[in-house]
Image (cartoon, rainbow, N blue to C red; front, side):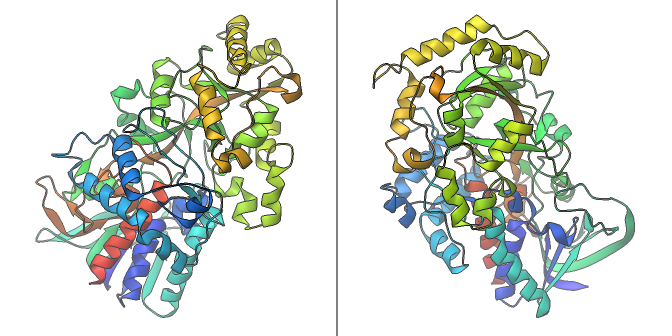
Amino acid sequence: MNYDVIIIGAGLAGLTAACELMDAGKKVLLVDQEGEQSIGGQAFWSFGGLFLVNTPEQRRMGIKDSYELAWQDWQGTAGFDRLDDEDKWGYQWAKAYVEFASGEKYSWLKQKGIKLFPVVGWAERGGADANGHGNSVPRFHITWGTGPGLIEPFINRVREGIDNGLLDFKPRHQVNQLKTNNNTVIGIEGVKLADDASIRGQETSREIVGEFQFYADAVIVASGGIGANLELVRQNWPSRLGSPPENMIAGVPAYVDGRMLMTSEKVGGRIVNRDRMWHYTEGLKNWNPIWKNHGIRILPGPSSLWLDAKGVRFHAPNFPGFDTLSTLEAIQKSGYDYSWFILTEKIIEKEFALSGSEQNPDITDKSLKQVLKRILPGPPVPVQAFKNNGEDFVIATNVKDLVEGMNKLVGTNLLDFMQIKEQILARDRELENPFTKDAQINAIYGARKYLGDKLIRVAKPHKLLEPSCGPLIAVRLNILTRKTLGGLQTNLNGEVLDLSGEPIKGLFAVGEVAGFGGGGVHGYRSLEGTFLGGCLFTGLTVGRYLAK
């Protein structure tokens, strides 16, 4: 069968491209190795965070933002240092994306019917100088409805396309080869997998029940990254971050396996920036897992005391929510693959949020009544469930019992009670005055000058040993795999490039498989809210290009 365009992968990037192509009247084939219940891919599980610049939501919160400031932050965060080669196209995609996030993106989302939560979050706060890593201002806009709310209009449009004959959707079709003729990609071939009614996110059968071949004028690879393939993560692990973690938990389902990266490489596609990846340092083992080794990320406020596995406090900029990659490097160089938060009940009830649509039912279900309950005393219901059932939590009324519980949890006597108590006391002494030399406490004071943080995100500064703020809580933090920052190198049309830098005719890539644009739009680090945005922007750009 022949189509105008074949799209491999029914995640957000693939859906976005499909919608643009259908709007132009193109005949599209959408294939995915998972079942129809998994349409939307990883975006379904997301918090729905979107990087946007100079929005009405920001202005209402008193935030002054601009393209110039955002581009300054992006460059300082990305640290592009391969501009003559691997970063050549990623840099250009990055500049185009920041322009999009500062301009058309907001109105385009509104046209799709996508609404935003009114309070703007402040992710990746940096901790260096003005030209260094991090967001200078809050830019993390949460989709009203989280991930499911973001993908809904695109799924609805795809279903319309199916009904009117513009799109064929073939789930449980696993692509094994890109077909070529005269150095041009002309189609795909692979195997049909047995139907599997497993719920979204669960690992599905790989039983083969047939084969297929399809042809098109263009093929778009939209298959995602390698986050669930822990062997491949370790294989590509950068030496600058120390040795690969012995133990990691998976922030994505098993189908995020990197298959199409290698399949595209076989026809000449160039993979760049393999050593760049984005894994979180605040992972919890899910007490109610959906997929194997399922991890959930804490989205922390800035107040928890962060210690390495030996009980030594991390230094700036390694505070909660400030610099993910720097903290990952510090953890790995400690010789262990976990770390600890120490906090109070007052901190957890205001500063702990959990990433993921299923961990935020109030926003996912668009229930304003339930959202307002977040201001009541006590942690949000999903956080309380982890406190009650999660294996990573230790709760005690005094430091001695807390440290004993922490040692018991990991099965060692690595932590010394007096060493930890002295660090807590030293930190608490700095709260005697409204000014301090402690960089983290200064950062807490600074965060509360932003209204959004003061209202719902950052606890009032207090001593960890203040009895009225207790009990004390320790949380073991695991390394959580998530995103591939490198990928197939593409030009600004989304055409996959070969080793000589020339486009492979007929082959395009969007989303994570292309490093969210050009083979690495983020450089070394993300400003957050940029993964979903990168899927939208690359899908939109390639869809518009092929629509012409």
